[in-house]
Image 1 (cartoon, helix red, strand yellow):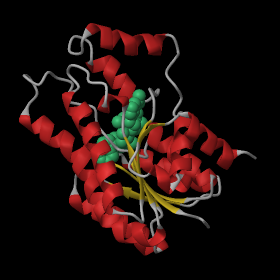
Image 2 (cartoon, protein in one colour):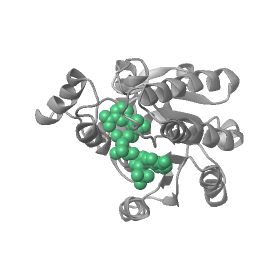
Image 3 (cartoon, protein in one colour):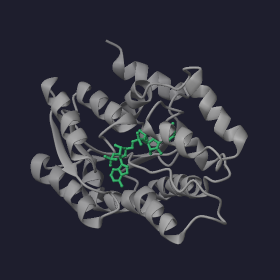
Image 4 (cartoon, protein in one colour):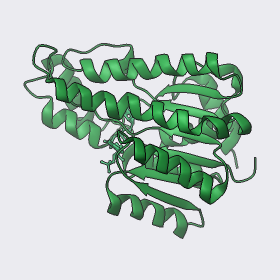
Length: 259
Ligand SMILES: NC(=O)c1ccc[n+]([C@@H]2O[C@H](COP(=O)([O-])OP(=O)(O)OC[C@H]3O[C@@H](n4cnc5c(N)ncnc54)[C@H](OP(=O)(O)O)[C@@H]3O)[C@@H](O)[C@H]2O)c1
């Protein structure tokens, strides 16, 4: 595939930025989205300085017009979409079901579930014709429930389900939900900042301990795995929920990154 076109949301920092950089290094042209204009433009600038091609669409994935603009920008600029990576997400509300407000639930689902659905729908025609891929960034929280993380666990679980249904409905497309591991990003900082006194102590201390012992992973390796999956995931895997470092993915990454 020559210079595949890949859209990635939540590309201003963390895992999304690492994935965008890896994609560009692998020869993809990327269309980047997030809300923070300065950070997003800086990421695109670094990709261009390294010889890559990056377009930017600033805005909130919960807004239907931003989803439309993101897809349309890719089509206008490059004429096709080879892969969509739904990476942008929020963790909050961190709250017991008995305490979380309706508006917080609505906002959460709009960002973590409805945005990816709208983006997928808008990209479908091009993805079908390109036999493209949809990579939904999920989480272990989709299958390992935690008190006070009902919204996040439910939204990631919903994303896994959507991935499976997309695979059933769209035989030309390869859809995967991927758990990226526990990574040293702002989302982890948010857990340490807001989880105290709300999360169960054992859960909270686990994340604090990983940070204190320097055991949080850099986003670079999972970012590389997401990039390889977006470009090369085999169609037989369509519909699955996978973990970024399971053996078959490590083999695929080695196969496509060996120099
Ligand atoms: N970090 C972990 O340990 C971990 C573990 C499992 C799964 N994940 C998943 O990995 C993905 C990336 O998370 P991360 O750890 O890199 O988090 P992060 O550092 O908080 O980055 C989130 C990214 O999403 C963007 N974003 C957030 N809300 C958005 C919105 N409404 N519209 C558009 N962009 C939005 C942020 O940029 P702006 O603020 O500029 O919009 C940022 O670029 C998420 O799907 C997360 O659930 C992370």
